[in-house]
Length: 176
Image (cartoon, rainbow, N blue to C red; front, side, top):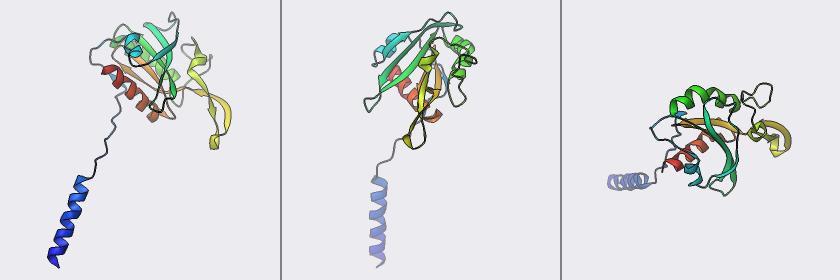
């Protein structure tokens, strides 16, 4: 009897130890710098389709800003905004406040409080309501952002965590 129990426990342990381990997703830190310099070409190479280049005269320190989309794993287009600066320090020092102003739960999507109003309508979408009923309430399109090297990437998502996952995936793609 003891032998059968020991054998059964051994088989059970083997089955459990052979089970696949789930890969743990680790999102990117909000501000990172590994010394690389990026341009819109890096995004074009991963399938980013730029729709518009914004006028950056009133966005301190920005070299260029692009609005466009890339298809997600399901083949659906997702909008992104990418802002390029001369270097990482400028992106943090001059761009962080502007990125925080237009992203996340407390984002300012009105001309009266937005720090940079160039094409503000592209940073807004109409929100659905409860139970998937469309109520047309304006809301921020970008729930999060990351500053990576010389760029700031505004990312869509259902919430800040989901958007950070989208940011991480985009940064991983351009870093490959």
